Length: 283
Image (cartoon, rainbow, N blue to C red; front, side, top):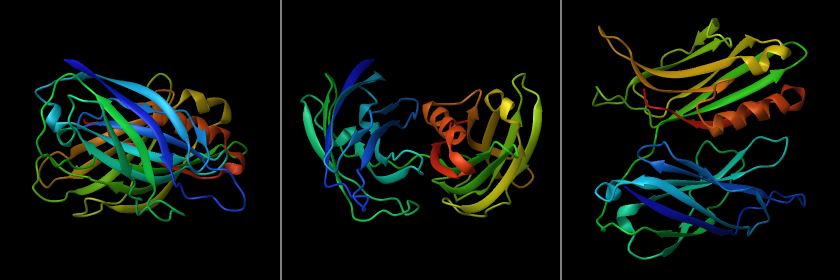
């Protein structure tokens, strides 16, 4: 196993917020296809921010490197506002000469579900160095994700959970887009189930639109002691339903993105809805 260094240098020509507001952004990277290594920069300001940060990717097998890559996303991180996904790009390691340190400018493609986003921005002089690897062409797809909205009203103790949209849902046992639904389970600090809910089924859609909202009662003093489990299932006839993936937020969060989402929701004034994408953990 080897290690790989990724340097996130700078971005340019980012879309302005308007009204004289300063743009604050953060770069987030996800190792593919394992989805187990998540990296993010510090938040920087301006339309041409300088990040100048280095990250180490662990357990890079030279024999598998041509089947690996990075998903790079740029987020707008204005305080007390919904996070904005400005754009994303994918880098296949098979298309890069890993024998040398390579600088790449990645054009960002906006996501259709991102609100208020305009033209594509250029991101990142991304330098990469690794001691082993050969080059060949490789196509690699996206990972399964769910766009989740959360809001909390401390006065009423109402936690609103909006299941908005899925991305790249697929079933290992089917050769077609699966029929999927999302299940939510709220559990206590000792693992006892408090309440549950689930969406209706979306049939044959790899990128299903749900737009369903559910309410859970959680007292303010309990907010840091509960865990919200989110699971996506593929419905199968005459067989046990297959889990596409899952993630969790709250007391036991499945990753840093989930920790940040939950913490930000707890701090939001007036119970405003905060929506973010979450990568599904393989079952």
